[in-house]
Amino acid sequence: DLQVAGGYAYVANYSSDVVIVDVSSSTDMQIATSTATGGDFSLSTYLSGTNLFVGSRDGTVSIFDVTTPTDPLLLSTTSTGGSVGAGFAISGNISVDGTYAYVANHDANTVTVIDVSNPSAPVVGSIVPTGVNPFSLTISGGYMYVANYGDNSVSVFSLSDPAVPSRVATLTSGGGPHSAQVVDGYLYVTNSSDNTLSLFNVADIAGPSATANNLEVSN
Image 1: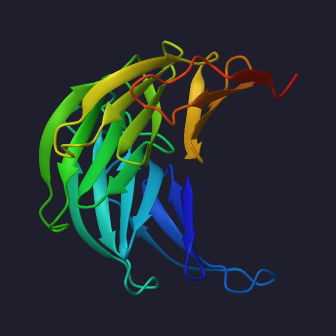
Image 2 (image 1 turned 60 degrees about the horizontal axis):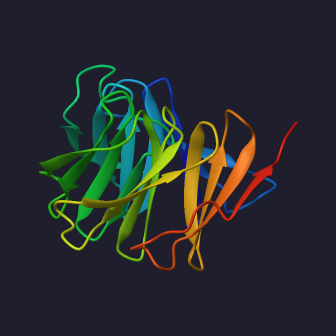
């Protein structure tokens, strides 16, 4: 997984480190530095301001200060509430909104809410149940959308209380929803098991429509 900002790409390596690449020149990319994370098997990244969040397979989230990208500073490493495997972190499973980080725990079928107002001392808050094997999540317009790979669904949570997400809807997607994004009142979901793209009208979140379209995108 990777994030790109300010002329640098932040790449999570499964070998439990993060590589920071200077991409200011597209014809002469250079590795600026690499640093070990606080967890085992780094898989996901999320950049929020000058803080880089890294999720690892052992169910931890590490936060780095990347004010100086060539000299990242590890601020903290926090368990999401699962043991090895039970907090399986994967690409796209972290999102940060305000002072809260939301982490989808694939094997635990939950999302963990972490207060990161002090990134050096994060506080784990509520842990809310999702569908089966949440693979990724995205936040838009005060709602969190969690793609559940194991039961072909998307869980929709209200963040009116950001510390305690409240489920307001469950949508049926194609097979094996993998990633989700909201654009202009529509939720787009890629489904890896049946090679489809699902589209939902979520402008009225109190009653999201059934799948507006389910298009095959690969043979």
